Each structure stands twice: as C-alpha cells, then as structure tokens.
Length: 107
Image 1 (cartoon, rainbow, N blue to C red):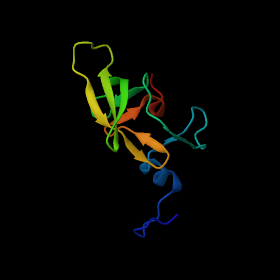
Image 2 (cartoon, rainbow, N blue to C red):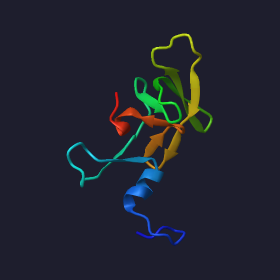
Image 3 (cartoon, rainbow, N blue to C red):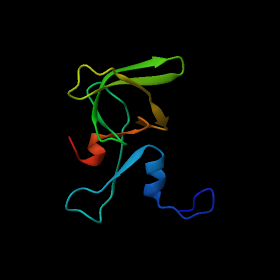
C-alpha cells in the first residue's frame, strides 16, 4: 500500500497509527490480528509507555467537545490521579502516552 507521502507502508502500520493495535498471537508468528480499543471504560488497565507502571481507569467523562479519562496508579492510593485526554481516530480510542494492557499481553 502506498502512503499519501509516496512511501510504501504496510496496512498494519497504517492501522497502528490510526489507533488500532497489531497483535501476533503466541505460537502464530506469521498471523497478524488487528484489534482496536473501541471505547475507554472504567476498570481498564493501561501501562505508561515511558515507565511501564500500570494505571487503572477510574472515571471517563466528556467536557465540551473532548473526552477525558482519570487514571490512578495501580497499588498507589496516595498518589494524585492523572487526567488524560482521550484520542479518537475513527472508531478507535487511545490514551496518548499509554498502552492498553491487552496490546502488550501483560496483565
């Protein structure tokens, strides 16, 4: 597939940049499955990209034209919550700077 800037890019890379995750299930090295997080929900666990700490979604709310998620570090009741603006790309949703735990295979 040719990207709009003329470079050749695989469909998996294009989907990954649009909020979809590219997963290779264990034991199936040649099989790629595309999974998108359609909705940020209370109770989901996300990992911070730059530190690897796990965060729990405790609240999701809309404010004007944006949606925000409130995250609390797992196992730390004393630290203040983190407010993150939900990024939406088509039908997929993500939290910038965080990875959904199912994407990494870690719980």
